[in-house]
Image (cartoon, rainbow, N blue to C red; front, side, top):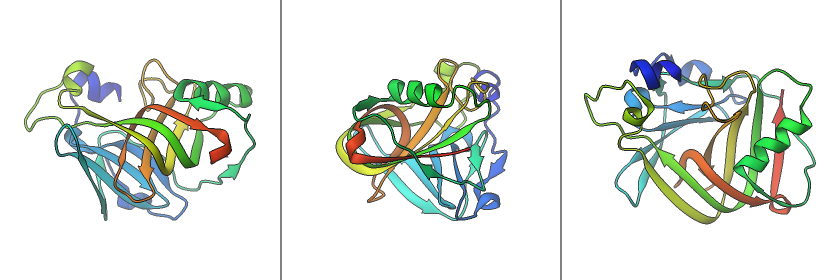
Length: 202
């Protein structure tokens, strides 16, 4: 992520068709920051901005990313979490507390009804040069939704800030709706734990 944001290294380094097992999950941006990628149960989905009100989600055979975090042999197991409403930050804090003695990255999957969510998709103009996060995020478009059923796939790590999580977070997640109409990087979320299942893979 650092090389993309600060040094403009936008070319794809990894293709998702090399990761296509049914236990594979992963996420990152499309090369040249043309959208978002989610590898979900070995299938590749892309999100691309249409305009300020809508984006397009497509399943594709493969996509290339300049950076990509993934797990190809996931062993997701559902865990019990407190009965309360969670935000993105409180979800991160929960994982941090439950796995305080675990030092390796974790794959997180949350399935169910999401009360509110904000996602974004990057959409850098053709030929743009990048040497800062502000430049990398030119064209980034956010979308807000309520009462959406779907899945959040995320990766948690205390040791990979600016590698596959942002500099101010241990968690990086993408969301896809069950109807495959919504996909994007998760900026904000609210969900009631009574309405979801919460699974973790070490």
